[in-house]
Amino acid sequence: MITALPVEPIEPAAATVPDVAVSIPESLPLLPVVLQFQNVAANSNLNFTFTTAGAYWSLGAMSGDSLGFSYNVTPQSAESESCIQQIEFNNAVLSIRTGAIDQASSGFTLTLFLQVRPGVDYLQGYCTLNNEAVVTAKIGAQSPVQWRNGRISAVLVGSENIYRNISFTVRGAYVGNKIDVILTTKKGLGKVSWSLGPPFAEASGVQLASMLGTIPLASMSYGLNTLSFITSMMADDSASRNAGSSLEFYLNAYIVYAASDLNYVYLKTTCNSDITVYAQIGNRQPQIVSQSDTVFTL
Image (cartoon, rainbow, N blue to C red; front, top):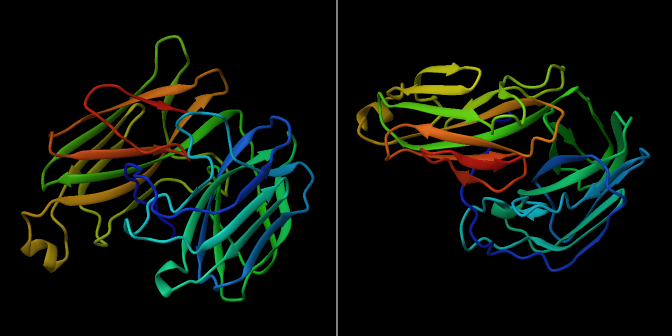
């Protein structure tokens, strides 16, 4: 099962990618893409090529808080080193050259974007990977698809409304805490609300996860503008013996709004001051949600 990834404030990356070459076509609608690589071989060439006309790899919009292209957004440690020697993407082709890889670095994550011409509702192409490698591709608000060596494809589904996924990490909570996350926008800019996800079969929907396996929640309420949580004791024995330990859980949720000029929303929390809530909209920079209105760019 694919679950929402933990999000944290971004620190300066220890790893660097030596060479990046890019060519971007004219301005087109953008879809955020997360590529999760597993079992990648050392000293190999990884290639992804679209044969569908009207689909291009992209760095994304020229926005100050966009992640754009990134490698290992949340590295395992500050000492993590890049296993990539070179990356190049030019229109329909993405090429990656790996270097020395140990077992810990054979999996890594890239974020970037797709530019898609209006009317394009699917992707087809091919990729070159070692036979053991698996790439999980999450495109926009759709369910992840797995790509292996050979042909690749994905469905792109449009909607009259715009959906954005938001990944939350909640830390520092204790048993019985109540946590509210409130969504608003400036009056007159349009309506925005929490959503269970886009209304098509390929959507990934809402996901809850915990590093300890059991989700430490007694209840969860998913309202129009407010998400509410009440924490509970973990069900497993080890957690029960450490009832005084802080709790942590993750949520992948959605907001929905009509196609408009809405460029930002506000999030705020109502909870104990010891609790920290991180939020990340799509491929933008993660931020701490404070107990006053915090601006998030769409």
